[in-house]
Length: 338
Image (cartoon, rainbow, N blue to C red; front, side, top):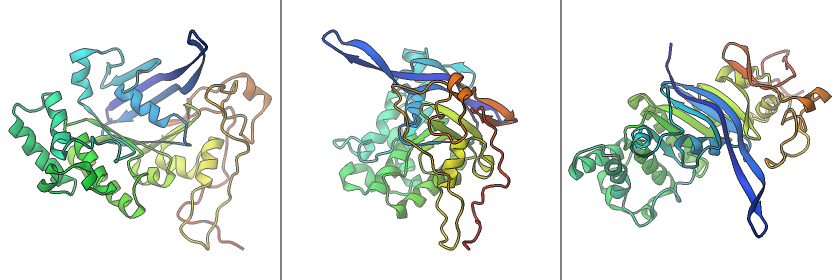
């Protein structure tokens, strides 16, 4: 069986809301509110949801760029949320990240050589500066650039080239897990496919495990092996990609998949339109957090929050209602317009 590389249990991140002269806490923004997920070695786990659902916050909590409020983050059997100092640094080097905005993720005053060699020096990956430079030359070539680019500054590159540099930087510490936070959303469509193909090639070459965060359902379908669907800080459904995209059992997932565009104007599929707006993470509805927009909500949904449980092996759902589709959702093909 494939080993579990990363496991998250009950992860929460609540941001306090303060006010008044004394700055007392008046409430919390519950950005992540009890997330459970498990990522296997060598796979790409896609985390998808609307803007504000907490996807990026999950990624930043894993890296402890922001400290979790509660929950456990377990890397290869070791709980890492309480690690500090040198113990945490030894684990932290096994994680890389590619941020959403390639323009903001690089220091404008630092050459590309400095951006790539600095993590190696900090984590003491190599013994000398010469070795660090040689490794930087190798990485810059692997992402499709050349050695001359090492001596330039970020403003001298296009968005796609900067994201390639960001990918190279994520690999400088020989990571085991790479978190990809919307790595193509800031890029032109013509460049997005190149970056996605590069990430796939590097995953095979270095045996990397990806957590791919995106709101783009088509990109998630292309890149992922398993998918978790987030809504208002929690996982609504998680399963293999084929199940999520062909036979979703959560009403929210069904609505998201029905909105996928079909690249053939002669084809169509039934669209599920959700009513209302996403509630505020400051005031999450009682019971099921999706009930205010769910077409199947009942009074029972107000009383108890549904747990994330497996109705079938490997298929986790957080819903009181059991959605049974009469036929799989057509993706590559759809019923012709009459």
